[in-house]
Length: 422
Length: 217
Image (cartoon, rainbow over all chains, first blue to last red):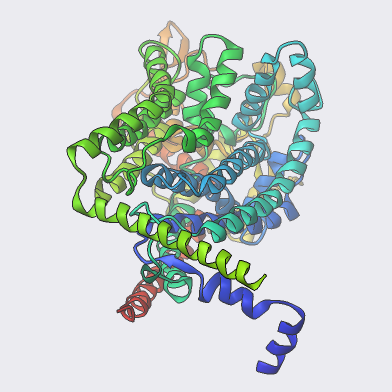
């Protein structure tokens, strides 16, 4: 064994890689279970890719056969029902995990320096995930698949000058049809592998800046522990708990997240009474509908997804510990979560009566909570410092300063020795 | 603090699932429970075969599939008679049905999943016929429905007859629920073992984790 390893190491940095990225990779020891969701997202991605490949072996991307082929998988393929329900429930699980992962970052301020690039690659991953999910949803070729795709592709028609041409180009036809289905299938198969590549970039950034942690500062060396075995076992435990919950939905409630309407084959001649997107798009869909003008709505919806990228610029507070020591920021965080739930409700409800003004207020609050952040975070920081920070926060800030000073000192020493050498 | 954080996500999940479950309809759906024992399902097949099959196909169900709900090969042979189709298809052809009703009646294979609260919806629909005006019948759940009151539920003269019809409707509903998801039983019984295994694995990893982390300091 040792011989083999030595043989490999002379040709490929296997041992040093494992050392650097696993057995000696420093991880803050105080990570809570909220830090499990990054690795969980990776596992769900794998579940989706593997189940998806098996589905593709039996699925037919043809408008006349797609619906039947899904039923064929459900009824005749060995354990086809399991593969299909893993994939459909996996889509929901993916968004649950990713949204929790994002909310953790927002709560603890993990997007702050030096983790901006992590946050932005994550933002890119979110967009890729949304595109993949949207295209995958067309494939069962049910009523909601069809009309969802019809509505969302038609949004590109709001583009000035060449809107209609753009819509036709996207669909490959004047309405969603066979041409749309085949291209969505091709892209739905391609995008997950681009996501895998993007995940690697996300991880390269992570292994360069290391994990954030609940304290919000970079811990001293003594408070970091190797990733393996401490966090491999913790991630495995978290994964098992996740799989228990996931399996419950796969085996006992698999249709909870599939709309009844989608068990009716797509019918271009008959529009469903309410076209409702999947739950994970509801808040954004509500924002789209809350803006009276179509172009404005499309821009607002795009902005509502992309605005997270601005967080490192918007949050100007230097108080560590995420929201724990920032009462106003914490309040805003919970208010924002409630606002998203209100938007989800608005997105699912028929746009009539009180739902319309409710959606408009919630949309306003959504953007306002980002808009006031630069001022609110600075005012809050000043107020907190004036009032006197808790001793532990002071200690944390001092220790971070001390670490920085220490690093600067070492750098200078190195430069001096270099000069001497010369 | 962590607890409130967690409670939020549970709340979020509950809210979302509540929204996705909520369906609005004119007529409140009957609160019925579906029993899927062999006898009920077999009776349900016969109700479909003698009434619904006039107009409705069930294209995802083959005669051979009926073995799964307890029919013997001989019984299936008797049921099929001289029919050559492999699948359950309507007696009247699509052309004739279009001439009568103006459309092809929907396939019933997935009906129990294709409506929200499918079983309750089917049962309520079939028991909601009423005499609108002299000899003109309509449905409270689906006003303007083109399907006639095939089980004559609205014409029942006495309570016994009504109960008898309702039992028949319950039977066929049970069969439609089975047909919409024939692997449900297999799924649920396999699920028990999968979840038990994963719970066991979680407990094991919990203790491994405690032990590994116990080495610190």
